[in-house]
View 1: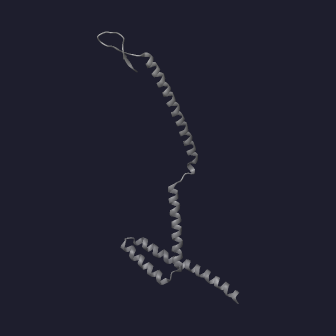
View 2 (view 1 turned 30 degrees about the vertical axis):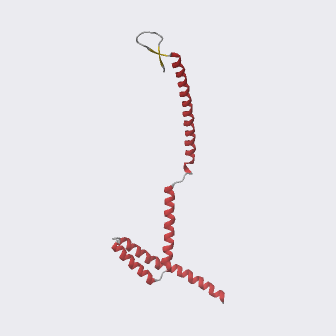
View 3 (view 1 turned 120 degrees about the vertical axis):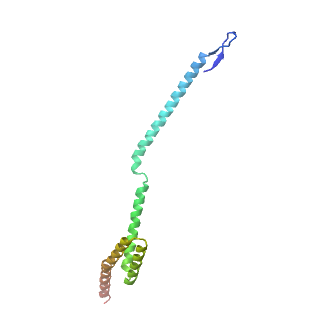
Length: 149
């Protein structure tokens, strides 16, 4: 709204608003407001479309927690397989030495029960799983020997 001096020649100058300019500026403002409303409406619609597309893709997104759990599972499987392979193929002397070191380390770290279970489990694995491995090796060598004759 623009204010201009009036044409009266009084001592006090009066400032009167120009009505035509005000009406013109109001129409400009309403047009700008309508354009911004239409722009915001378009933006809102595009955001809604994005959200609806996003809701369909939520099952396809990358889940870092699930990847971490899968990685931990694969690592545990890898460690178990190699530990079992080591227990089967290590000699009894090295096995007893490893068990003694585990018991000493467990007592130093105040993990007595964990060390005891680890040693007990390792000895059981060595006794029973190693026996199966030796039996399969013996049966394989027996099958090879008759073929050589």
